[in-house]
Image 1 (tube, rainbow, N blue to C red):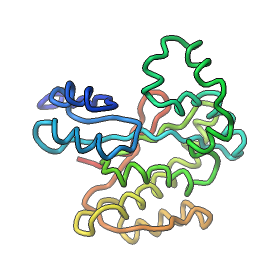
Image 2 (cartoon, rainbow, N blue to C red):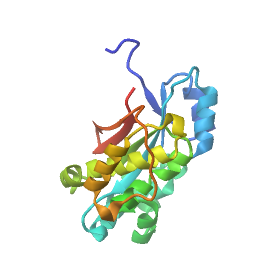
Image 3 (cartoon, rainbow, N blue to C red):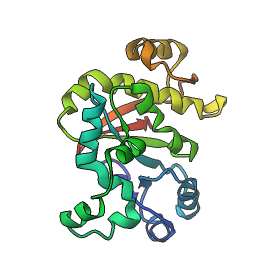
Length: 220
């Protein structure tokens, strides 16, 4: 085991869970880009250096309609939020609670399709809320390998650029000018980001996690 033990990230959704668990865990995980959650965690967590990790669902596919349909089939429960989901005991409960969620609802809540710039933009609310890390959740397994082969690398590069744009110039982390140019070449002209930055104090990386997740973490 690592010296000092294995860091534990705890999923929280509000003041009650933060007050109870922030003193016990190392890092925060949540699905809402809520700056108040970040501030409350920092206020209740002893010491510094805690990561605030936001989970962001995406549905990449070369065919946008297929991506939306997959997200609707497998992830439409996401629209209800945990204030609803936490009280649903069975799959039948989830089905009943989401029966009126439309394809349009899902497409409005989850970035879907092949446009990497649009997918990367979905991290922005978490950056603006002060999260330190982003976990991108690719919905389903049907296009998982193709996503990893074709889209994951360029998408990560574009997410880096957006993260750097939200950090002060003196402590930006991510890609240098040279690395940023290489990232844009890999992503292609159709996915040129609207803003960027530079700096190289930290580099982020994808780490494989269960449930087909790719995590965006700064190196310690």
